[in-house]
Image (cartoon, rainbow, N blue to C red; front, side, top):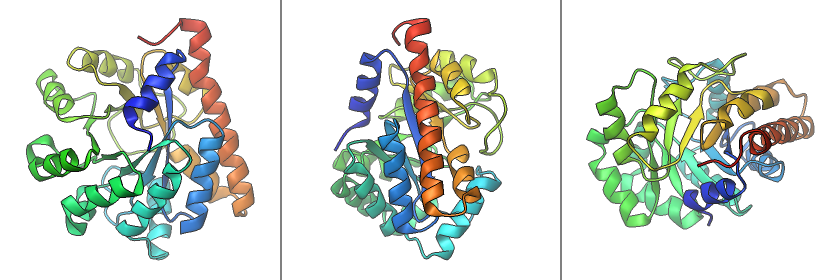
Length: 273
């Protein structure tokens, strides 16, 4: 499997930010979700976030909620999510799961880390889990060599940034704005300040998510971040597509646009440091 460290190292060597794409497993169906994520990778996505659909997604906006609801109606389970992650990892892209903590805890903390590692996944993003409540998860991820990714926000104090960053092992997820997920016409100016603050307390890569939807926005974020995360924009294309073939084409088109965006800073700004 490709590790997060390898994925970020490769993009850094190319003088650009990594492109990270998100889609929920099981959306619009299990097999179609694999097809769409593979299309994202073929079009330039470096790291794939496989979403674990959850019935109470506190930080997800209406677009991701709609996709998660569809996946849940289709019967998607945590075991399905791990299997999907394994199939996506076969593309060679670093593959992580994005999940709220309750499904992981119910599935079994050690079992989740063990099964994901066995499938080929390399990390888990847990948006609602705090480092202070992560003793069991830290032990499981260490035992099975799975990276832990936690979130920081513009409201995080310097002390909080140190605590969260110290608990991360793959990268630090910097939420560009307060509020729920969703594509936006502009990305908050607070994102760059947050990334600079995080860099003061860790040497891990810092990736920015929440609100990115265009190649231009990806290029702007790639000026200062190690990774650019896109989710809702991909999902919206799938929701609006009349069929899976059209959805695949639209997803691949956006991925190519975003991939060109993160590469644009290589010419304009020189290598990422």
